[in-house]
Image 1 (cartoon, one colour):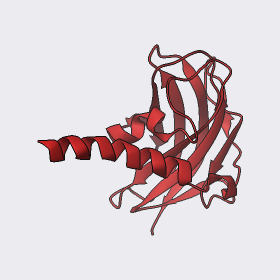
Image 2 (cartoon, one colour):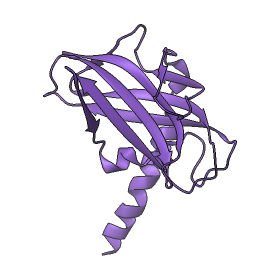
Image 3 (cartoon, helix red, strand yellow):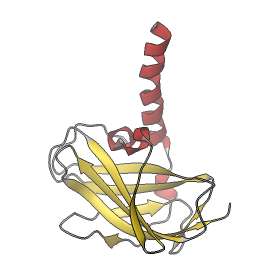
Length: 162
């Protein structure tokens, strides 16, 4: 039993360590579009290896991005909501639970967060080998426990062979 408790305590610590040690500052800044509605855009978005739009997402690898945003209100929890549009069909993109928990992926910060706090969020999104080679518009929205958006953007991508 103790082994399982130790493992359960270490996994989040390793994930937090990984978010803090990612060299996201070297990734290219990309042009984004704001989301529909009154959801605030981030201050800046950087996507690893994306030198021009659409960003190329190789199958079988993780797509990594960093988003700088300012918290719009105090929040105890943050979650990532991803929506993908391909071939005229829009659908939720279900992230693995540990990756959707945005508090685990804040860089040099942790939840709870305070209104006005400048934050950087690192998302590592799996692009599985079975994805078709198509253009995909991706919307990424970081929301708190009340459903309030703290940063939302849309970016054009294309899934490519690895």
